[in-house]
Figure 1 (spheres, one colour):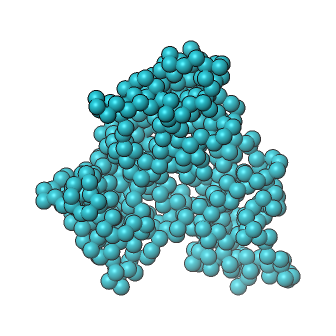
Figure 2 (tube, rainbow, N blue to C red; figure 1 turned 90 degrees about the vertical axis):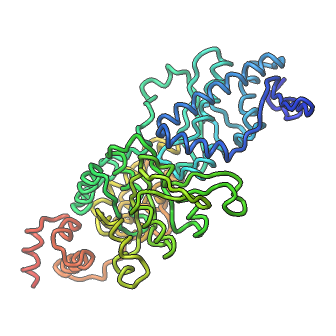
Figure 3 (cartoon, rainbow, N blue to C red; figure 1 turned 90 degrees about the horizontal axis):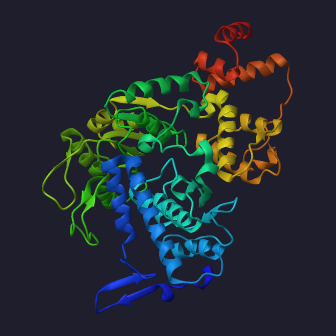
Amino acid sequence: MRAEDLDIDTLLLADAEVGALHFAGHRAVIVDAAALGTLRRELMAALGPAGARTLLSRFGHVQGRRAAEALRGRFEWDSEVAIRDAGGRVGILQGMLRLLPGTGPMTPEGATVGDSYEAEQHLLHCGQSEEPVCWTLAGFASGYLSCVEQREIVVVEDRCVARGDATCRFLARPREAWGDSLEPPSRGGATVSAEEWETRSPAMLRVLELARRAAAVDSNVLVLGESGAGKDRLARFIHARSSRAQAPFLALHCGAIAEPLLESELFGHARGAFTGAMRDRVGMLEAAGRGTLFLDEVGEMSPAMQVKLLRALQQRELRRVGENHARPIHARVIAATHRDLAAAVAAGSFRRDLYYRLRVIELRLPSLAGRREDILPLARALLAAACARAGRNKMSLGTAAEERLLHHAWPGNVRELENAMERAAALAAGPVVEASDLPDDIGPPPRSRGGSLQQLERAAITAALERHGGHQQRAAAELGISPSTLYRRLRRGG
């Protein structure tokens, strides 16, 4: 037998009279993928991300070992390589994944998975993650390969669709080969350190200091800032430093979901509450448990949803759609928006009472253009992370590339910079990122039209002051000079 010879007719036997299914000779059941996604969310709510990861990884490990035992006992194999490769084929036949041809976990390049049911369900039920989440699949591969190889094989996922990567990737090595790189899972599923912000900006350092103080209390937080400035990262930063760090961090984008679905996502629903409600569903306010619920783009909520959210936050309880009894809320809420909510309140499009309920602590993230001293340090950190995800050696930024990065306006903020570094890590031919490796819209810096050095200096100071609303300390930080030097040059230039 070879791996490619396995098909569903060979492995699956259905006995309609007895009401039993057998897969590779072992009794099996068919489980709805969405039910597994719901179970995952409830496990995370009850045990926290670390506990859910441990449980699901162990379940996958047992499942993989049993699959290897069944295949070894049922068929005569062409070679040890054939039965080893059969594990991926079993995963495909069971509907767990789509393995890209020519890849395998024991190879140096690893196994590339284009369609993981686990990543799909995590995104649907738990939202985007900061870490790989295909815990059952990694456990399955570890158990299967350990049984086949007769030694402990550990499979690690280093890329994941649920984290925002294009594909999932699994690497398999004997435990001793991993050395000290096998670190325990992070607590709480949100590990954003201050160093990861790579900031020198006084304004950003002030925000991070306020965020640390906010983490020490349970008050609601409102994060304001342009799209792509890192509002979700700041919310995770607060959660990871709070007493709730071991509980779930769940995120809900309020502007991406239609109002009827948003109500169900937020509060949950009872079976039969509306057409298609085939089972009870736990809402995210409830599923977050004693953790944190991040409501992104809360300014997009309709007036009706604003009323319902306000009532839930005031009374610290909710009613699922279709139910008439209340359930307690224990989660902390961090809300975010790119809109000017104070102006929306004045215009009557956002409720004043909800605004003040959410804005117990307000944090305003500066745009990337407003903290230009952070562009290159942040670009280098993002480039290093992109190289690690792509499996490439570390790269550096060339002088021409740095020039373009420094002079770009960054309308997409940190998210745009992250995407640019992801592209550079994928396309750069050598160890140095050249200007041509950057997106086309990050063009060359504008050429000077001439003028004396004093005129150029005056223009630079004027532009910096305009960007910072006349704030001299921030303008000086952007220009790379001290506030006293800026003051002297302002006096000299009139």
